[in-house]
Image (cartoon, rainbow, N blue to C red):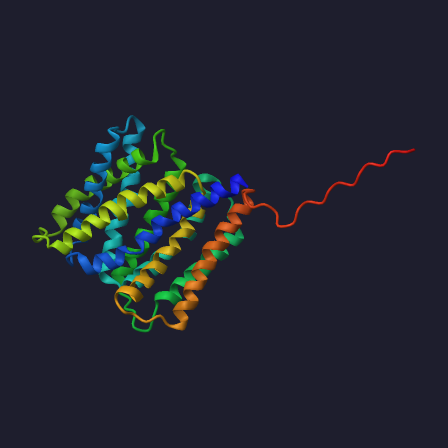
Length: 307
């Protein structure tokens, strides 16, 4: 029972991260200046990483310098750059749909790098999730920009590699310290790219500052602390399946904040997403022996001794 509770608590805490990430699309399009995806990604990562470094006061040593920058690039620099390009060029829900292939990529990479078996039920759950996300966001009015789609797919591959390698390279430090290393490294890598490839950012408005602060403190420092903590406790494929919550939240925010209507197809898609997440977690918990049997084992027959 305690094992069940601990696992469920770890899953729920990890799920907070992709749920909050679902607000990225709304904040990006509503609060940030248009046309500065690399600069915005840098401003989201670097200040948050430096703030966490000031708290932990611990730098990488030895091989962890290289690993911090590799993971920082995969989880933040390249991933966020592609995420913002996709968010700027596609409707928020469509951008999220493209990234929904990530759980299937993680399943394949977990087999390659971690030796995890490819579970049929997990693949089915991933396909159900992608179909559900498609019903959620692929409305007749959805625009499919080729550059945005390629950027979204590239970001999904990058995040999938980052998810698996984060589990493969277990750090000898706390999740808070590990998060600070990756955020700072990712932000540092984005600085020269943003300076050379994009014009100078205009004087930010109050809304711009609020949006960047939210994405940095809540959407980066807080959520990735939960995410990396989760990756140290549950399987990467289990964590990746929680990513389906992101487009679900993005769609719900569009309904609540932007007055968008939810069609019957979208409601069906939302239900499919929830079923997908539950099915994926259920299959992995059962495989790991966390789920207790629904029927108690039969008591052994008493041994009859001869009189």
